[in-house]
Image 1 (cartoon, one colour):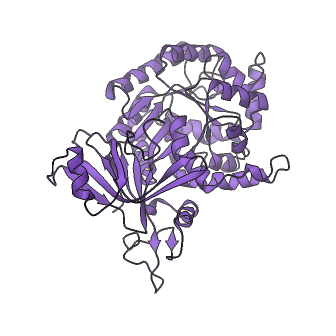
Image 2: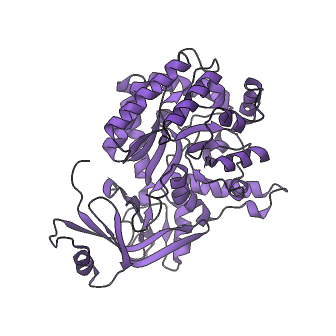
Image 3: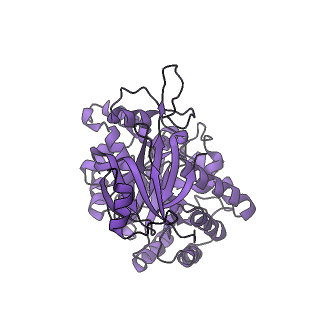
Length: 471
């Protein structure tokens, strides 16, 4: 990570979200990224651009200090890096093992035993290294990670994210109630807050200023925390307004009932977090499937954000979140893979499932056609929306001067006259997306959303640094 970056010109087609409902297509375009990984110019591409633009920017003419990267015309395009707003790094080995469990049974059967085992660095390291590698390979440049209760395990995850060059929020999970097994929970609220402070101090030390890796307060969810712990975390949140908060809310009907039983003095699940100072403009709420009207309005009023996790909501039979309803309430939303409740490391998979889940929601008479999400909208949630959720809306999520170059080069398979892939395709490699030459760019992107996978992700950059390349 200490190696200096060259000034770089990226040439070709660029696609990004201009608004929630509109993708902008910038063809025959040049984007200049300086040695800090920041976009410093965007302009039409002409034959003189590769020499004239660096000269205007005052870049040295030496090839050693300026790199040129071109997207293949018609079959490749640059797209902002994905933002995964909710995933559990230690749960990655359990991906696909949700079985027939409900949420609370699944936690006790699969999740808690695995997370507890990762207090051993020898066991944790390959798990974390693999999940970081997988998410980067799928174009995820920013990830909001839940770690474990163990400080050492949490710190290791932060270290590995920084070493890999992935932008990340890393949170030590807080849980001290009897809902959690005795072998896997904090000894008490004071111990939980102290351990959280230790992990925050470590992350502050390895990445001062949070250029890539930041700490995040992480009460697992209200039922796993005593009122004393929630109070302590709320006080810590007030003392550290620079640290975001992440937790779960209203994922499952049984969970909502449990919160009502455990916190009878509060009117709602959202009200529990609000009462303890944990519902703020920097709070990330995962799921939000069963919010009431009053809760959605409270979330919007506090400026808290929602991570929509369609894959896990379906897999664990939690329900179908009403994303259109949340957006119309003014709630900012992003996408989360929620591994291992979710079955895939791909935010692109979450995007297509978000489309499909919204169509199921639209079949409910009270919702109607307006509930459907478009390709354009889910790609916004995967980039600009996700950036807002994690507090990085001024730095990543789109191609604009002043933003950092978090991007992926996407390659599509161009079919030749014999049914194979032409030279203009993804370097002769079979992938999930086939294009035949008659498709508009809107159709190419739609094919990518519904058929694409990591084979189509050719290169990935974070803050201007190449962090993944498909050989």
